[in-house]
Image 1 (cartoon, one colour):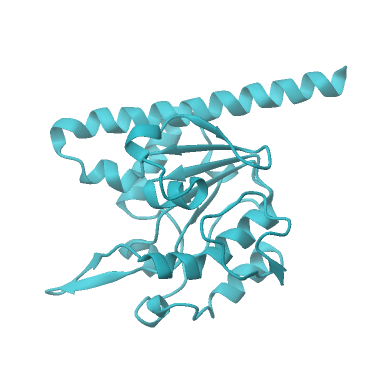
Image 2 (spheres, rainbow, N blue to C red; image 1 turned 180 degrees about the vertical axis):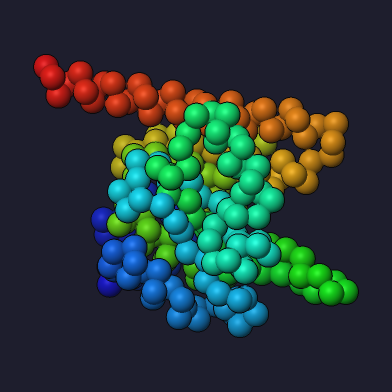
Length: 226
């Protein structure tokens, strides 16, 4: 185990005690048995991240929903389908990205027969943060993309405003680049008359991320040839 402050690629808000070690397969297995907060009791399963072990870009969402809880994979429900469409428009290949969430279990409340999403509280977010820390420590990404307010505040601090500060690059303490944009579920919840505009902002943000990656790769290639 490592203390959070040791070797972690970025500072996380309210870091928790120790980071589990291992490759992504080992971490995924270990996370299945996590009882660090009460959310595991009602969830179907842990929803760990998915993607290449050395992805250049990690996209961090908020928490799993109903469909993710059933399938055990991130971004497979309606919000995931909207994200897939936006990624395709921005010409970003999902298979080259690592997608995960700040919280790894589905939190919900029962209304009638439906299980409706409920935001994880601060203690539940903090308890789950060791898994996000472990993922980042293992992957060592160049770019971190926060999808939504919870992820953005986890990376950039509790005063971060997704409304005011989305779409801007931020330099992280270790030199990596951070970026925040709308969570696709927020786009889906937006009233019809504003939804298309918000979706276009999401696509434009993803295009900016792609442009930055292309420019960074060209710069690295030029330096290697010099």
